[in-house]
Length: 428
Image 1 (cartoon, rainbow, N blue to C red):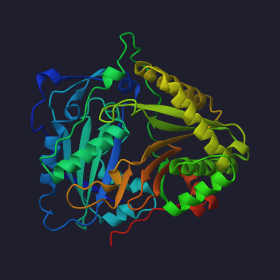
Image 2: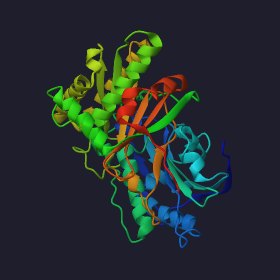
Image 3: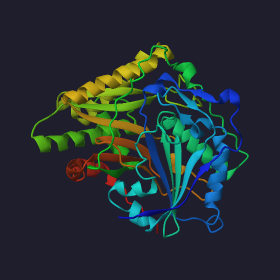
Image 4: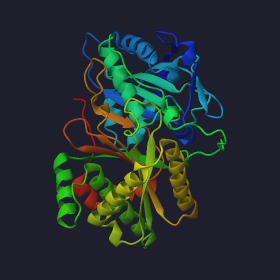
Protein backbone atom coordinates (compact mmCIF):
# COMPACT_ATOMS: atom_id res chain seq x y z
CA UNK A 1 0.00 0.00 0.00
CA UNK A 2 1.29 3.46 -0.91
CA UNK A 3 2.46 5.72 1.89
CA UNK A 4 2.73 9.50 2.06
CA UNK A 5 5.17 11.97 3.55
CA UNK A 6 4.20 15.54 4.42
CA UNK A 7 6.64 17.95 2.77
CA UNK A 8 5.07 21.09 4.21
CA UNK A 9 1.96 22.21 6.07
CA UNK A 10 0.78 25.82 6.22
CA UNK A 11 -2.26 28.04 6.61
CA UNK A 12 -3.32 29.94 3.48
CA UNK A 13 -4.51 33.40 4.47
CA UNK A 14 -7.01 35.57 2.59
CA UNK A 15 -5.55 38.02 0.09
CA UNK A 16 -8.01 40.65 1.34
CA UNK A 17 -9.17 40.63 4.98
CA UNK A 18 -12.84 40.04 5.74
CA UNK A 19 -14.65 43.28 6.66
CA UNK A 20 -15.85 43.48 10.30
CA UNK A 21 -19.46 43.60 9.03
CA UNK A 22 -19.04 40.06 7.66
CA UNK A 23 -17.18 38.64 10.66
CA UNK A 24 -20.18 36.60 11.86
CA UNK A 25 -21.64 34.36 9.16
CA UNK A 26 -24.98 33.05 10.37
CA UNK A 27 -25.56 29.45 9.44
CA UNK A 28 -28.98 28.63 8.08
CA UNK A 29 -31.40 26.10 9.55
CA UNK A 30 -30.54 23.85 6.60
CA UNK A 31 -26.82 24.18 7.43
CA UNK A 32 -27.47 23.44 11.08
CA UNK A 33 -29.36 20.19 10.53
CA UNK A 34 -26.99 18.91 7.85
CA UNK A 35 -24.10 16.47 8.10
CA UNK A 36 -21.24 17.96 10.14
CA UNK A 37 -18.59 16.11 8.15
CA UNK A 38 -15.82 16.89 5.69
CA UNK A 39 -16.74 15.91 2.11
CA UNK A 40 -13.55 14.73 0.33
CA UNK A 41 -13.03 15.27 -3.44
CA UNK A 42 -9.85 14.58 -5.40
CA UNK A 43 -8.71 15.57 -8.89
CA UNK A 44 -5.92 13.61 -10.60
CA UNK A 45 -3.61 15.17 -13.22
CA UNK A 46 -1.11 12.67 -14.72
CA UNK A 47 0.84 14.90 -17.07
CA UNK A 48 1.97 18.37 -16.04
CA UNK A 49 3.44 20.67 -18.73
CA UNK A 50 7.08 21.42 -18.06
CA UNK A 51 6.45 25.16 -17.73
CA UNK A 52 4.10 24.45 -14.78
CA UNK A 53 5.93 21.66 -12.95
CA UNK A 54 8.01 23.90 -10.65
CA UNK A 55 5.29 26.40 -9.79
CA UNK A 56 2.13 24.32 -9.28
CA UNK A 57 2.00 24.80 -5.53
CA UNK A 58 2.57 28.55 -5.82
CA UNK A 59 -0.24 28.86 -8.38
CA UNK A 60 -2.62 26.93 -6.15
CA UNK A 61 -1.64 28.89 -3.04
CA UNK A 62 -1.93 32.32 -4.66
CA UNK A 63 -5.26 31.58 -6.34
CA UNK A 64 -6.64 29.97 -3.17
CA UNK A 65 -5.64 33.04 -1.17
CA UNK A 66 -7.53 35.28 -3.59
CA UNK A 67 -10.65 33.14 -3.95
CA UNK A 68 -10.91 32.81 -0.16
CA UNK A 69 -11.48 36.56 0.02
CA UNK A 70 -14.81 35.82 -1.68
CA UNK A 71 -15.42 32.51 0.14
CA UNK A 72 -14.33 33.89 3.52
CA UNK A 73 -16.36 31.48 5.77
CA UNK A 74 -14.07 28.65 4.62
CA UNK A 75 -11.17 30.41 6.38
CA UNK A 76 -13.01 30.85 9.66
CA UNK A 77 -14.11 28.63 12.55
CA UNK A 78 -17.50 26.96 13.04
CA UNK A 79 -18.84 27.47 16.56
CA UNK A 80 -19.51 24.43 18.71
CA UNK A 81 -23.31 24.40 18.29
CA UNK A 82 -23.23 24.97 14.53
CA UNK A 83 -25.14 28.24 14.49
CA UNK A 84 -22.52 30.56 12.99
CA UNK A 85 -19.02 30.76 11.52
CA UNK A 86 -16.53 33.14 13.11
CA UNK A 87 -14.96 34.54 9.93
CA UNK A 88 -11.73 35.40 11.71
CA UNK A 89 -9.45 34.85 8.69
CA UNK A 90 -7.58 32.03 10.43
CA UNK A 91 -6.96 30.60 6.99
CA UNK A 92 -7.18 27.22 5.31
CA UNK A 93 -5.02 24.16 6.02
CA UNK A 94 -2.78 23.41 3.02
CA UNK A 95 -0.55 20.35 2.79
CA UNK A 96 2.18 19.46 0.31
CA UNK A 97 2.63 15.69 0.30
CA UNK A 98 4.91 13.21 -1.45
CA UNK A 99 3.34 9.85 -2.45
CA UNK A 100 5.83 6.99 -2.82
CA UNK A 101 4.31 5.41 -5.94
CA UNK A 102 3.27 6.32 -9.48
CA UNK A 103 -0.27 7.64 -9.96
CA UNK A 104 -1.19 4.57 -12.00
CA UNK A 105 -0.89 2.41 -8.88
CA UNK A 106 -3.72 4.45 -7.30
CA UNK A 107 -6.13 5.10 -10.15
CA UNK A 108 -5.69 1.68 -11.78
CA UNK A 109 -6.51 -0.10 -8.54
CA UNK A 110 -9.83 -1.93 -8.97
CA UNK A 111 -11.00 -0.56 -5.64
CA UNK A 112 -11.42 3.17 -5.17
CA UNK A 113 -10.20 2.89 -1.56
CA UNK A 114 -6.61 3.38 -2.75
CA UNK A 115 -7.32 7.09 -3.33
CA UNK A 116 -7.43 7.62 0.44
CA UNK A 117 -3.70 8.37 0.32
CA UNK A 118 -4.34 11.76 -1.37
CA UNK A 119 -6.44 13.02 1.55
CA UNK A 120 -5.23 14.20 4.97
CA UNK A 121 -5.27 11.18 7.27
CA UNK A 122 -8.50 10.61 9.24
CA UNK A 123 -10.13 13.71 7.73
CA UNK A 124 -12.55 12.41 5.03
CA UNK A 125 -16.08 12.08 6.42
CA UNK A 126 -14.86 13.09 9.89
CA UNK A 127 -16.30 15.82 12.11
CA UNK A 128 -15.85 19.35 10.80
CA UNK A 129 -15.88 20.89 14.27
CA UNK A 130 -12.62 22.34 15.54
CA UNK A 131 -11.00 21.88 12.13
CA UNK A 132 -10.56 24.26 9.24
CA UNK A 133 -13.81 24.18 7.19
CA UNK A 134 -11.57 23.59 4.15
CA UNK A 135 -8.43 21.46 4.03
CA UNK A 136 -6.45 21.21 0.77
CA UNK A 137 -3.76 18.67 -0.08
CA UNK A 138 -1.44 18.75 -3.08
CA UNK A 139 -0.05 15.25 -3.63
CA UNK A 140 3.06 14.64 -5.77
CA UNK A 141 3.51 11.16 -7.30
CA UNK A 142 6.79 9.50 -8.29
CA UNK A 143 5.77 9.68 -11.97
CA UNK A 144 5.44 13.48 -11.92
CA UNK A 145 1.64 13.51 -11.77
CA UNK A 146 -0.28 15.31 -9.05
CA UNK A 147 -3.60 15.13 -7.24
CA UNK A 148 -5.42 18.12 -5.77
CA UNK A 149 -7.83 17.19 -2.99
CA UNK A 150 -10.26 19.36 -1.08
CA UNK A 151 -12.13 18.37 2.07
CA UNK A 152 -14.92 20.86 2.72
CA UNK A 153 -17.26 21.07 5.68
CA UNK A 154 -20.79 19.91 4.76
CA UNK A 155 -22.00 22.33 7.46
CA UNK A 156 -21.07 25.23 5.20
CA UNK A 157 -21.30 23.69 1.73
CA UNK A 158 -23.56 21.28 -0.12
CA UNK A 159 -22.49 19.72 -3.42
CA UNK A 160 -23.66 22.70 -5.49
CA UNK A 161 -21.67 25.15 -3.32
CA UNK A 162 -18.59 22.94 -3.40
CA UNK A 163 -18.66 22.71 -7.20
CA UNK A 164 -19.09 26.50 -7.46
CA UNK A 165 -16.10 27.05 -5.18
CA UNK A 166 -13.82 24.57 -6.99
CA UNK A 167 -14.78 26.04 -10.38
CA UNK A 168 -14.13 29.58 -9.13
CA UNK A 169 -10.79 28.54 -7.63
CA UNK A 170 -9.72 26.98 -10.94
CA UNK A 171 -10.88 30.05 -12.88
CA UNK A 172 -8.85 32.26 -10.54
CA UNK A 173 -5.78 30.03 -10.99
CA UNK A 174 -6.03 30.55 -14.76
CA UNK A 175 -6.82 34.26 -14.49
CA UNK A 176 -6.06 36.15 -11.29
CA UNK A 177 -8.36 38.99 -12.44
CA UNK A 178 -11.39 36.66 -12.24
CA UNK A 179 -13.98 37.79 -9.68
CA UNK A 180 -16.30 35.17 -8.17
CA UNK A 181 -19.78 36.19 -7.03
CA UNK A 182 -20.94 33.84 -4.25
CA UNK A 183 -23.63 35.00 -1.83
CA UNK A 184 -23.57 33.78 1.77
CA UNK A 185 -27.20 34.62 2.44
CA UNK A 186 -28.80 31.19 2.93
CA UNK A 187 -29.91 32.17 6.45
CA UNK A 188 -32.29 34.73 4.92
CA UNK A 189 -34.12 31.88 3.18
CA UNK A 190 -33.73 29.27 5.93
CA UNK A 191 -33.50 31.25 9.20
CA UNK A 192 -32.54 29.33 12.32
CA UNK A 193 -35.56 29.46 14.69
CA UNK A 194 -34.85 30.75 18.17
CA UNK A 195 -36.54 27.70 19.71
CA UNK A 196 -34.51 25.22 17.65
CA UNK A 197 -33.53 22.00 19.34
CA UNK A 198 -29.80 22.31 18.70
CA UNK A 199 -29.35 18.55 18.75
CA UNK A 200 -31.65 18.07 15.73
CA UNK A 201 -29.65 17.02 12.70
CA UNK A 202 -30.06 14.77 9.71
CA UNK A 203 -29.03 11.18 10.46
CA UNK A 204 -25.56 10.09 9.53
CA UNK A 205 -23.02 7.45 10.38
CA UNK A 206 -19.25 7.27 10.12
CA UNK A 207 -17.92 4.90 7.48
CA UNK A 208 -16.55 1.56 8.56
CA UNK A 209 -13.24 0.19 7.32
CA UNK A 210 -15.14 -2.88 6.17
CA UNK A 211 -16.70 -0.80 3.38
CA UNK A 212 -15.11 -0.75 -0.06
CA UNK A 213 -15.77 1.33 -3.17
CA UNK A 214 -15.61 0.70 -6.90
CA UNK A 215 -16.33 3.12 -9.70
CA UNK A 216 -18.38 2.05 -12.71
CA UNK A 217 -18.97 3.81 -16.00
CA UNK A 218 -22.28 4.00 -17.87
CA UNK A 219 -21.44 5.02 -21.43
CA UNK A 220 -23.79 7.34 -23.28
CA UNK A 221 -24.85 4.50 -25.59
CA UNK A 222 -25.63 2.18 -22.69
CA UNK A 223 -27.64 4.89 -20.96
CA UNK A 224 -29.62 5.31 -24.18
CA UNK A 225 -30.24 1.53 -24.22
CA UNK A 226 -31.47 1.69 -20.63
CA UNK A 227 -33.77 4.62 -21.39
CA UNK A 228 -35.19 2.86 -24.45
CA UNK A 229 -35.81 -0.30 -22.44
CA UNK A 230 -37.62 1.63 -19.69
CA UNK A 231 -39.83 3.67 -22.04
CA UNK A 232 -40.77 0.71 -24.25
CA UNK A 233 -41.98 -1.35 -21.31
CA UNK A 234 -43.90 1.38 -19.47
CA UNK A 235 -45.60 4.77 -19.71
CA UNK A 236 -42.45 6.49 -18.40
CA UNK A 237 -41.54 9.59 -20.41
CA UNK A 238 -38.13 11.20 -20.82
CA UNK A 239 -36.26 9.37 -18.03
CA UNK A 240 -33.01 11.02 -17.02
CA UNK A 241 -29.68 9.23 -17.09
CA UNK A 242 -29.50 9.25 -13.26
CA UNK A 243 -33.02 7.82 -13.01
CA UNK A 244 -32.24 4.81 -15.20
CA UNK A 245 -28.75 4.27 -13.78
CA UNK A 246 -29.94 4.45 -10.16
CA UNK A 247 -32.80 2.08 -11.01
CA UNK A 248 -30.28 -0.44 -12.34
CA UNK A 249 -27.84 -0.28 -9.40
CA UNK A 250 -30.86 -0.48 -7.06
CA UNK A 251 -32.04 -3.64 -8.80
CA UNK A 252 -28.55 -5.11 -8.60
CA UNK A 253 -28.49 -4.32 -4.90
CA UNK A 254 -31.79 -6.16 -4.42
CA UNK A 255 -30.49 -9.17 -6.36
CA UNK A 256 -27.37 -9.21 -4.18
CA UNK A 257 -29.46 -8.99 -0.99
CA UNK A 258 -31.77 -11.83 -2.11
CA UNK A 259 -28.82 -14.06 -2.97
CA UNK A 260 -27.46 -13.56 0.52
CA UNK A 261 -30.71 -13.92 2.51
CA UNK A 262 -32.79 -16.10 0.20
CA UNK A 263 -35.76 -13.72 0.38
CA UNK A 264 -36.90 -10.29 -0.80
CA UNK A 265 -36.51 -7.40 1.63
CA UNK A 266 -38.28 -4.04 1.04
CA UNK A 267 -36.00 -1.16 0.04
CA UNK A 268 -35.72 2.57 0.52
CA UNK A 269 -33.64 4.68 -1.86
CA UNK A 270 -32.92 8.34 -1.18
CA UNK A 271 -31.98 11.00 -3.74
CA UNK A 272 -30.96 14.58 -3.06
CA UNK A 273 -32.89 17.40 -4.76
CA UNK A 274 -31.26 20.80 -5.20
CA UNK A 275 -33.53 23.66 -4.04
CA UNK A 276 -31.93 26.13 -6.46
CA UNK A 277 -34.32 27.41 -7.75
CA UNK A 278 -36.35 28.71 -5.93
CA UNK A 279 -33.19 29.63 -4.02
CA UNK A 280 -30.77 31.69 -6.19
CA UNK A 281 -28.00 29.68 -7.87
CA UNK A 282 -25.22 31.79 -6.32
CA UNK A 283 -26.48 31.26 -2.75
CA UNK A 284 -23.86 29.25 -0.89
CA UNK A 285 -24.67 26.82 1.90
CA UNK A 286 -27.00 23.84 2.11
CA UNK A 287 -30.16 23.95 -0.01
CA UNK A 288 -31.12 20.32 -0.57
CA UNK A 289 -34.20 18.22 0.14
CA UNK A 290 -34.54 14.43 0.17
CA UNK A 291 -36.58 12.25 -2.19
CA UNK A 292 -37.63 8.93 -0.61
CA UNK A 293 -38.54 6.04 -2.91
CA UNK A 294 -39.65 2.78 -1.30
CA UNK A 295 -40.38 -0.67 -2.75
CA UNK A 296 -42.31 -3.38 -0.93
CA UNK A 297 -42.62 -5.98 -3.71
CA UNK A 298 -40.23 -7.51 -6.23
CA UNK A 299 -42.40 -6.19 -9.06
CA UNK A 300 -41.69 -2.60 -7.98
CA UNK A 301 -37.95 -3.25 -8.37
CA UNK A 302 -38.23 -3.88 -12.12
CA UNK A 303 -36.54 -1.04 -14.00
CA UNK A 304 -39.63 0.51 -15.68
CA UNK A 305 -41.66 0.29 -12.46
CA UNK A 306 -38.91 1.74 -10.29
CA UNK A 307 -38.23 4.65 -12.66
CA UNK A 308 -41.98 5.41 -12.79
CA UNK A 309 -42.11 5.36 -8.99
CA UNK A 310 -39.03 7.57 -8.71
CA UNK A 311 -40.47 10.11 -11.15
CA UNK A 312 -43.75 10.13 -9.21
CA UNK A 313 -41.94 10.69 -5.91
CA UNK A 314 -39.89 13.53 -7.41
CA UNK A 315 -42.99 15.25 -8.77
CA UNK A 316 -44.81 14.87 -5.46
CA UNK A 317 -41.88 16.52 -3.67
CA UNK A 318 -41.83 19.36 -6.21
CA UNK A 319 -45.58 19.88 -5.74
CA UNK A 320 -45.15 19.83 -1.96
CA UNK A 321 -42.36 22.40 -2.03
CA UNK A 322 -43.93 24.60 -4.71
CA UNK A 323 -46.17 26.55 -2.35
CA UNK A 324 -44.10 26.02 0.80
CA UNK A 325 -42.39 29.00 2.40
CA UNK A 326 -38.62 28.58 2.26
CA UNK A 327 -38.31 28.85 6.05
CA UNK A 328 -40.45 25.69 6.37
CA UNK A 329 -38.32 23.62 3.97
CA UNK A 330 -35.64 22.65 6.54
CA UNK A 331 -38.27 21.30 8.95
CA UNK A 332 -39.76 19.22 6.15
CA UNK A 333 -36.29 17.99 5.13
CA UNK A 334 -35.55 17.07 8.75
CA UNK A 335 -38.86 15.19 8.94
CA UNK A 336 -37.97 13.18 5.83
CA UNK A 337 -34.53 12.44 7.23
CA UNK A 338 -35.98 11.22 10.51
CA UNK A 339 -38.47 9.02 8.64
CA UNK A 340 -35.53 7.44 6.83
CA UNK A 341 -33.66 6.97 10.12
CA UNK A 342 -36.66 5.25 11.69
CA UNK A 343 -36.71 2.78 8.80
CA UNK A 344 -32.96 2.19 9.19
CA UNK A 345 -33.27 1.61 12.94
CA UNK A 346 -36.13 -0.86 12.51
CA UNK A 347 -34.12 -2.70 9.82
CA UNK A 348 -37.28 -3.36 7.83
CA UNK A 349 -35.74 -2.13 4.56
CA UNK A 350 -32.43 -2.23 2.73
CA UNK A 351 -31.49 1.44 2.41
CA UNK A 352 -29.57 2.90 -0.55
CA UNK A 353 -28.35 6.52 -0.64
CA UNK A 354 -27.89 8.32 -3.97
CA UNK A 355 -26.35 11.71 -4.59
CA UNK A 356 -25.45 13.39 -7.85
CA UNK A 357 -22.57 15.71 -8.75
CA UNK A 358 -23.50 15.89 -12.44
CA UNK A 359 -23.66 19.04 -14.58
CA UNK A 360 -21.26 20.78 -12.19
CA UNK A 361 -18.14 21.00 -14.37
CA UNK A 362 -16.08 19.15 -11.74
CA UNK A 363 -14.99 16.56 -14.30
CA UNK A 364 -13.27 19.32 -16.31
CA UNK A 365 -11.61 21.34 -13.52
CA UNK A 366 -8.57 23.01 -15.09
CA UNK A 367 -6.19 25.00 -12.87
CA UNK A 368 -4.09 25.85 -15.93
CA UNK A 369 -2.43 22.53 -16.74
CA UNK A 370 -5.36 20.69 -18.32
CA UNK A 371 -8.36 18.62 -17.24
CA UNK A 372 -8.18 15.78 -14.71
CA UNK A 373 -8.00 12.15 -15.81
CA UNK A 374 -10.06 11.13 -12.76
CA UNK A 375 -12.35 12.84 -10.25
CA UNK A 376 -13.42 10.86 -7.22
CA UNK A 377 -14.21 10.86 -3.51
CA UNK A 378 -12.95 8.93 -0.52
CA UNK A 379 -14.84 5.78 0.48
CA UNK A 380 -18.04 6.62 2.38
CA UNK A 381 -20.90 4.73 4.02
CA UNK A 382 -22.29 1.41 2.81
CA UNK A 383 -24.98 1.23 0.11
CA UNK A 384 -23.93 4.64 -1.18
CA UNK A 385 -24.10 5.58 -4.88
CA UNK A 386 -22.51 8.86 -6.02
CA UNK A 387 -23.11 9.85 -9.65
CA UNK A 388 -20.64 12.04 -11.54
CA UNK A 389 -20.07 13.09 -15.14
CA UNK A 390 -17.54 10.92 -16.96
CA UNK A 391 -14.33 12.63 -18.06
CA UNK A 392 -15.41 12.68 -21.73
CA UNK A 393 -18.77 12.30 -23.41
CA UNK A 394 -22.25 12.25 -21.92
CA UNK A 395 -21.95 9.11 -19.82
CA UNK A 396 -21.97 8.68 -16.06
CA UNK A 397 -19.48 7.45 -13.51
CA UNK A 398 -20.97 6.04 -10.33
CA UNK A 399 -18.93 5.47 -7.18
CA UNK A 400 -20.48 2.49 -5.40
CA UNK A 401 -19.73 1.78 -1.74
CA UNK A 402 -20.78 -1.50 -0.14
CA UNK A 403 -19.61 -3.83 2.58
CA UNK A 404 -16.75 -5.99 1.35
CA UNK A 405 -18.76 -9.23 1.17
CA UNK A 406 -21.62 -7.52 -0.69
CA UNK A 407 -19.20 -5.95 -3.17
CA UNK A 408 -17.83 -9.38 -4.09
CA UNK A 409 -21.35 -10.41 -5.18
CA UNK A 410 -22.33 -7.03 -6.66
CA UNK A 411 -19.34 -6.70 -9.00
CA UNK A 412 -20.14 -10.00 -10.73
CA UNK A 413 -23.81 -9.12 -11.40
CA UNK A 414 -24.44 -9.88 -15.10
CA UNK A 415 -27.11 -7.19 -15.55
CA UNK A 416 -24.79 -4.55 -14.08
CA UNK A 417 -21.95 -5.58 -16.39
CA UNK A 418 -24.29 -5.53 -19.40
CA UNK A 419 -24.72 -1.76 -19.02
CA UNK A 420 -21.74 -0.61 -16.93
CA UNK A 421 -18.04 -1.39 -16.76
CA UNK A 422 -15.43 -0.85 -14.02
CA UNK A 423 -13.49 2.38 -14.52
CA UNK A 424 -9.80 1.79 -15.21
CA UNK A 425 -7.94 4.83 -16.41
CA UNK A 426 -4.51 4.76 -17.98
CA UNK A 427 -1.89 7.47 -17.50
CA UNK A 428 0.06 6.31 -20.56
